[in-house]
Image 1 (cartoon, rainbow, N blue to C red):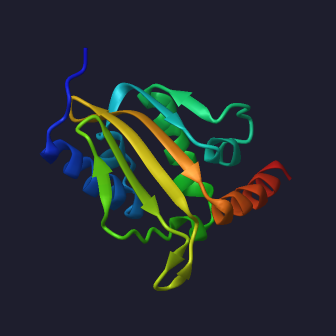
Image 2: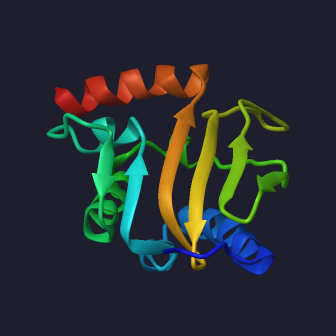
Length: 144
């Protein structure tokens, strides 16, 4: 059974996940995930065109996704403005990458992470309208 994470664990994941993605630090990113973690995002279908399901199980599969995604995907997905606001109850961490930013529109996402024992156990990414339109274009490029 997993225990609730501390406030420090939650803040660590909130800060480090963002920093490691922006820096494209896959090893640092993977250090935040549990061995049996689950990742759900439609970006899996765009980054890994042979995939038919937007869900991965296990740290090795998640590592392969991030390695492919950070290497192949357009730079526009790498604009990561966020407001600094997050919500957590000790078991779940949620924040938004809003569409409207001081520099203009970006891919809009909501990150939801179940955190257990200081690690990400289940990570779900919900895409807004701007992000969804980008996914359609990326999927078309990846399949051609």
